[in-house]
Image (cartoon, rainbow over all chains, first blue to last red; front, side):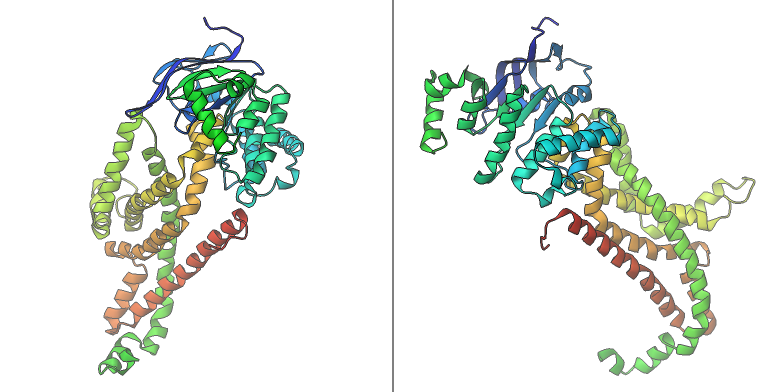
Length: 252
Length: 247
């Protein structure tokens, strides 16, 4: 592959339309190993679509996605194998309601990685203990609070031991008092060096945790840079406008 | 009250609710009824399997599977469109003719077999549609979550989508199974002496309709436990998954 072999993620010229609506119009993005990149931007700017494309949940119209040197958008790539190496956490948790917490977490390792039940459960128990969820392992998702559900969803993604974690507005569906516990988990992961691409509306969180912040507008990355620069001295008028509104809403 | 006071009640009572006749025909009809139960049980298992296969094929994505999907659509249209009584008669009286020269006579003259095949084909079409509705009612985010873990389409269907779909369609499935229980009486048209045919025979012999009532009671007795069982099944699931929510 011609691409830089060290990039964890390399997105080049990515286009994606839904019918006549062009959501992504040429995204170029690179993530180094252990880098945490936050995507900010208004609703509909293409943050979620970008994450779904990287995970191959949406077929791309044009452009390339290269993960650890492998072009995953080329024909004949085994999408299941690629997805096994990428964790994604959704805004609405998407836990499996008919399975206990433990089964939610062990499903992927058992079915996709071929681990035995014992191995998968050991791994799950370890992660649950780490995130203070051990007492919830036999509960069903609907019996948990939103924050607990989202933490379980993060554990479910981590149980696959992914090289890359995608977080799609993981706190947007939570009550304000539950946001902190989820962000705390993500901070921990960032501190451990997990490579993460995070779409978020939590600006102060982005400022704390991100190595780099990308502002998406109209399907392109309009501006990117270290958080101090984006939040402190944004260059583009659109970025300034967006952040101005966030400040007015009292979210920064 | 209205019924009991009507002028014809005495005659109706004697024709339909004759105690002596009831006691006389009940044992025979009950033993004939066992055949209905057997046909029902075997057919139900086959229907559950066949219909699920049809529903899964119909949910396969992509243009590659179009011919298979089209086939299932034709099948469902056909067997839902033709009246049940005709399917049974065509299969039961027509198909054995195809095996006119077959050597063990099993295939040639086995109205129980062909009647049951007819029921399986008929009800699989209905049940496949119930399954399909269930599969489509599971939100796409569920299979997205499963696929994002690296599960294949098949694994996602088996572990995530179908289990949730099944739980949702238990009540409508029950509807179809009660329909099936009752339609086992159609096999009687092929000359099989099941409960309904047996009661016809007794009615003709005694010129009294009480045996029909007898058969009706037996069918009701069979469906009630099944209905309570599914109620229990649905309630147990709710209790397990949901936190003290009144639904």
